[in-house]
Amino acid sequence: MPLVTTTEMFKKAYEGGYAIGAFNVNNMEIVQGITEACAETQSPVILQVSKGARAYANHTYLTKLVEAAVIENPDLPIALHLDHGPDFETCKSCIDGGFTSVMIDGSSLPFEENIKLAKRVVEYAHDHGVVVEAELGTLAGIEDEVRVSAEDSSYTRPEEVEEFVARTGCDSLAIAIGTSHGAYKFKPGTKPQLRFDILEEVAKRLPGFPIVLHGASSVPQNYVEMINQFGGAMPGAIGVPEDQLREAARMAVCKINIDSDLRLTMTGTIRKYFNEHPSHFDPREYLKPARANIKEMVKHKLINVLGCNGKI
Ligand code: G3H
Ligand code: 13P
Ligand code: ZN
Image (spheres, helix red, strand yellow):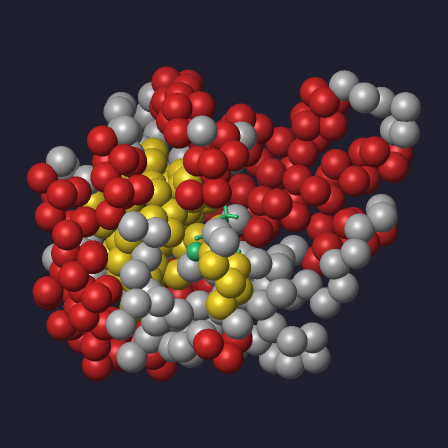
């Protein structure tokens, strides 16, 4: 099948109490590891590309890699999504360039400006058969070149969501309930806790509407330890507990964004490989286990965290 939008995926996910994984892709091995995991587990998937990914790998290379995954996996529903679209022009370029879904991230703008920008993107996207994710509330962490400190982050205000969705016409909404981008999401020694009360209130005000969770990596400690053991330095890297992500997926959350876990898996595996094979210098030798471990990590997410296995 050709690339799909997220409409059908989200409808089924909402009704079925599971979530679709939205994994960031930057190169061939990441695309292959993710889609092989999805094919084996029969899981629909969102492959997402950030502004940084487009700057690194170039739009054409990324879309062609995803196109290759579509050809290799003809039965797999795959959506191609722009992650954190910073402006109308970037969204337009992705819509014109074959994406089936875009995010317009106006979360750092005042409410009225966020609405105005999202509405403009929605109008253009819907005219071209593309769906739109918008965001209300600000996550801490690093989004592309934008750094948001914990002090400047803010939870989504449930009393704003109905007006925002009605006036923008967006198809899904990213909210801030305590997750953050990157590998350092919570202070060591503190108990990570997402604000399920906010999620519940949002769901009550937007019945049946798909909610998105950014910054949802769980930062697997086996890979953090592997990185630290083989020359890296990532002390205190902590993610969102997997049981809380599973709980969010049972609720209104239909899309769970994962990037840092892919990075950790790849980096840990390659660091270990270099340590154990100091004389090797063929990239295929160390990218192969990295790809294999990405596949295993993603399979674990699909089955045990998202619950989207067998849902194609
Ligand atoms: O939310 C941010 C994603 O992890 C993408 O990161 O902008 O460095 O590609 P990036
Ligand atoms: P993580 O840094 O938790 O993987 O979040 C990724 C993300 O939200 C991409 O938009
Ligand atoms: Zn994000």
